Length: 324
Image (cartoon, rainbow, N blue to C red; front, side):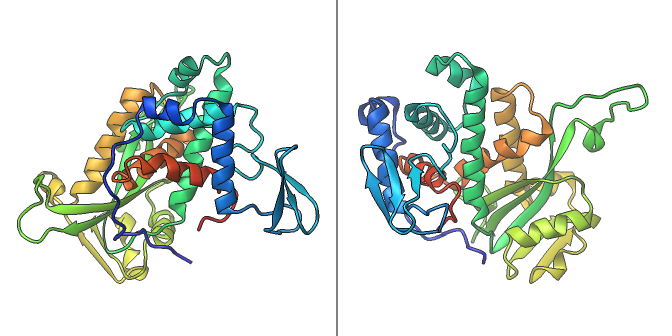
């Protein structure tokens, strides 16, 4: 069943947890482990063997024991840390850095900050966190007025042989196609305080193989509620959208009018591209979705402030469980 993004939850605006506060709150491995257990106790533990939800806590083993079948579950099992040997504090530092900056953090820079000898475990840790972000956002569905368009992101790809020359423009092998969907409500009056013609809501970005309507329509259907209104250009890629939503408005959009008719789609695409260029030298196509997950997760929670770290921690604890 689809779950709509919460639109009327009001968060008290507070500053994002700074580095000094983070160090004070989580000075060592034990404080991180205890916080992780606290969140896991709140979210609940599900036995992988029998599905039981009632457990004892074996303090001497730091494990849960199912009251029904006596199967034991480690503190990491079923979470984003499942199978990882990295310290809890590494994970907490990574979560803090990802949520305390508007931009992002590369694995190489995080490796330097942690002083870890090997790059690969740090890289895997960051992608696990981004996957947890994506899983959390997959639990929600867009609604209302939606702007929809495709973006083309430069990615690293090997071109082999003279028979496969590199193309230019949107058909280039170096361009990965991304379907961008964003809630965008018209402003009563002329513009918002910042001069935008629409108020932005929540955002989704999905890597797609091609621009055929057979590919795009199912993606839209799984991410947007049926009673929505979708605004697009007149591309044939969108000629079946009227079958899955109440209303689809398509129109020829002159280049100079794109910022008026579909403003937030192109603002978010531009911001994401700028972010990736600043932080990462090359992104392989198969990993692009991971970076988009982080961008969308932080965009959709841009007003959470210091709560963003805690919400990511909950997503990490609930990694293999059904999100609530």
